[in-house]
Length: 251
Ligand code: PGA
Image 1 (cartoon, protein in one colour):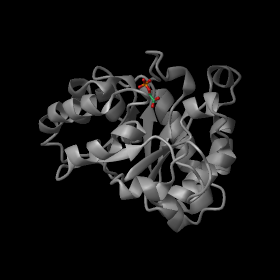
Image 2: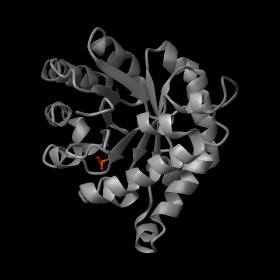
Image 3: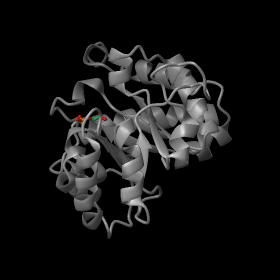
């Protein structure tokens, strides 16, 4: 029996128009109608959020955004703030994805700002951490995770920390077809939970849900979810197909 309810989340990245979003949820909704064992979150691109919220109203599917700005409003061309996402019906937001760290200058400091903004807007943040291949090969995985957690979660109280979801996403496993073994994921999750306990106390750490992300597919989901340390997944490529995402949800 699991202590923590799993979260099965899909990150569409820069894929799917409004019309494709409608088509997806028409297919996806009946496939996950019986899924009461977990929480389901789908994160479409900004222009599809509204229609995704409408298409999933009255279902257990929750909608998340892929980013938000740390300011509440202002002259920040091209940015979107937490209250806009909340008003549009989003419940979750992904923060600090490795693609944002790699290509868009995301740092632990900006992750921290976005995280506080998400909490202030009442959104559940999904904070991503994970090491690059060369960092793993140099034996730096634990240090990298600790640094990302310390920086990303700086200044939070245990009460502020408690709704947060953390996604462990080793960069070398994202979009590469090279999934981390359940053992590698479990070891990283242990490091994250230990650090959370040290920073926020044993209880918030015990209830923290840590997702694994990186080439999660219908054929490796069972092995990952067999481990009680893995509290769900953040799925990229395989979430784009309603059928594969549904088989992941219904692991
Ligand atoms: P992937 O992406 O499942 O395509 O590897 C995971 C992610 O980027 O969250």
